[in-house]
Image (tube, rainbow, N blue to C red; front, side, top):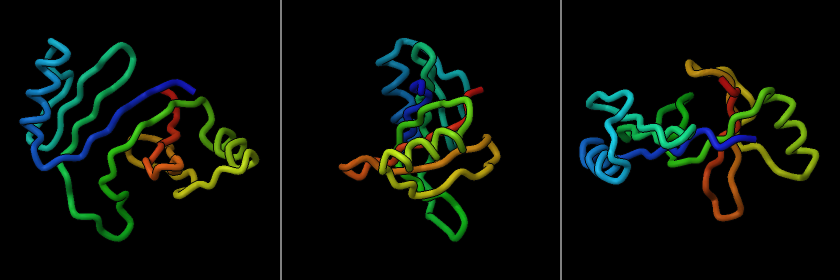
Length: 114
């Protein structure tokens, strides 16, 4: 597994983008009113506008994402180790991902390596 993304959901995209612009000393690789994406090494820092969760949507949870070659195989191995998937592997507009939570309740995404 490779660290792929840190995702932050916020009501203040501009403020968060300004903070990471100053912290990293670089411009976002993509930006709109609803999001900003910065790269740090090979890791994406994804800042996204908060939204009200609705049926069928992923809730706007801050999370960390790890990239793997095969999401289904990685998730099968994780469940064999006793970990519980919150959301099993599913295809989204960005690719195939699954979600679980660490012992403190932080959401962890397992996503297809690009």
